[in-house]
Amino acid sequence: MMNRRRFIGLTGAVALTWPISARTQAASRVTRIGIVSIGSPTADMMGPLPRNRTVRAFLRGMAELGYGFGRDFVTEPRGTDAFSTIAGPVDLQVDIIVATGGGTILSSLKQATNTIPIIMTAAPDPVNQGFAQSLARPGGNFTGMSLQTLELTGKRLQILKELVPGTETVAVLWDPTNPELWPVAQAQGLKQGWKVVSVEVRDSSEIAKAFKVAADAGAGALLIPASGILFSLSGQIAELAAQSRLPAMHELRPFVDAGGLISYGADIEDIWRRAATYVHKILNGAHPAELPIEQPTKFELVVNMRAAKALDLTIPPSILIRADEMIE
Image (tube, rainbow, N blue to C red):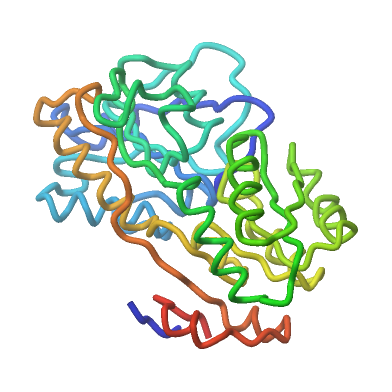
């Protein structure tokens, strides 16, 4: 790897019951932070040196602010394997929740509590999705970072056009957790001369069918956002794209890490690192209702050269020179 500069879709809600194991591990002054990071199992998120890169970035942010794991705080993580439909009352025995952005997860948290501060890491559209009154003044128990999913849609389509200039039709995969994406993608695509095809994926069982729909519509390229169902299927999507020989532009780097071709979007690890500043402010008396929701400041273009080779695709110099990282 040369360094140059799985949100899960759910048909039910989220079971969010954190055990009180932290109480037996540390004194009462230790803050218990619930972590919800979709796309990897809970085991990869545990402890002071988790395998999960985004959770590790959050812990790095806490360390940079002077907080010691086990001394000042502990985490109670929940990953992909911990989610199921809520059958009864939810018992949230944590002081603060840091949660990956996404409509299904955040909606479940909103239903579960209106008192525990919830820090969103990369919410696609927190105001229109009902988690905040405004970016400047959220007004409830939600705050954190937005993802600029919609704002960057046109840029992703532009890069995709550079990647496959002879392709006329692009299929846009989207799911019900982010219904705003399709009209934005359609408008931006038409403006750039694309013929744009809508492919809705309502649950994980439809993903293989979605690729067939795209191919039957004559699509020569794909635009794939990091919304709920799709993010949780990043590995399967990468495999299907390779089998279908369809170049795909993804929203976030984890798709490329899973074998996808290219991504352009917010640096998700930087967002998780910055989430620690919200924890710090809340622990020092700030209320989430008054903490502005911030937008990402670091963006990354990541190219998977192995995936390009498998597609017999030559990455143009205009993209290579701008790439922040190329996976060899």
